[in-house]
Image 1 (cartoon, helix red, strand yellow):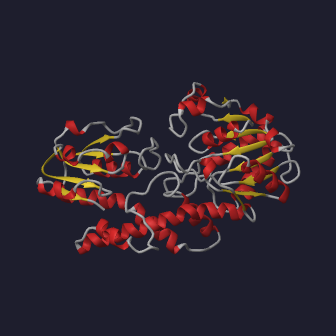
Image 2: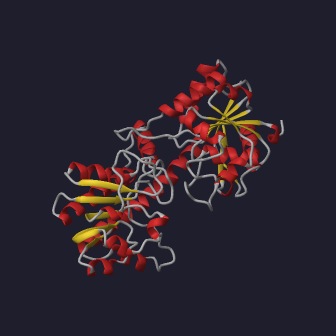
Image 3: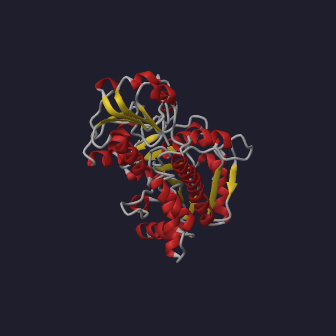
Amino acid sequence: MPVNQQNICIIGLGYVGLPLAHAFAAKGYTVHGFDINEGRIEELQNGHDSTNELSDTQLQEVTINFSTDAAVIKECDVVILAIPTPVDDNKKPDLTPVRKASETVGKNMKEGAIIVYESTVYPGTTEEICGPILEEHSGLTCGKDFTLGYSPERINPGDKEHTVTKIMKIVAGQDSKTTDILCALYGDIITAGIHRAANIKTAEMAKAIENAQRDLNIAYVNEVAMLCHKVGINSSDVLEAAGTKWNFLHFQPGLVGGHCIGVDPYYLVEIAEQLGMDTHVISAGRKVNDGMAKLVVDEVLDAIGGKGKILVMGLTFKEDVPDTRNSQSYTVIKALQNAGCDVYAHDPKAPNGDVPRATLEDGPYDAVLLLVQHKEYREMDTQHIIDAVKDGGVIYDIKGMLDAEKITASGRKFLAL
């Protein structure tokens, strides 16, 4: 069957699945979008995407059959699972969402289908965990009645330049024929090109190390920032000077959260532990980055002399997105609350949550913490924040966006990583 005549089902319609469904639909494929979240399906059927990955115009210009009825899977030749892979409270990989989605697909897939996983997992997950689940619930034999594929997502939430079709796609199938079909299928929508991986485990490993590498680089500059503080110099000035060398890698210190960089390294740690190997470097990077929220809290509490009224600006895990998954801003808030502080939050992107909302005008505050570089904050005048802080109070600008000299001249304390 020609690839452009294949029916496609995308399982999971979040930051990854929805743009992928849109890309296939825009090329004329018959696309079914399945999600267990009824609210999500309803908003998509009404032509709106609350993740802001697609505009209302983009969403409404294509035809996608959005549904919570798993029966749509039976109609599809290719089923692509874009399911989150979080970690639990003990930092252990939680494959529950992938397992449950695999059960649903297994109960509804048709013979001859290709089942593709895009989730970040440790090597072996697709073939050794997901494959048997599909077999159990379908009564079909993997490799004979259906085949597996893996093509990891590389979406950068909020990035309107590096969109799904403009990022090179890694593709692997459990056999050459499946790989050929998937390379042609993805190649029809990906303008940046296709990388044919040697096998599924190679593709799984490649994806996991991408985010672990970023985690390690950020951990390095976070540790550099801590050392600069001890020495008594500004880490931003140091990184600016070092960055004049052509091969210096440009990373900024900060809080590391979200559903990728702060999570994926633990999948490598898990498979290493299963194989009896210690991951010294990967684990060290996670330890540093997991400790940055505590560093921020300790510095703020020390600077204000203990308890106080505090405004935290920025709740999402990164700038200009509404996604709060694994955001370290909440770790900071919880620690400040546990220390007895009266904590409020402000975020123009994030949905309302359990933390009381407030604005700069609701001050004065003992401290204002600018933790996320939203566009609205980047365009804000430093004086606006100064006016919201008591004389002698603290302004913690985690990325060093504000005018530090103006803040200190005003009688406020300036802190940054």
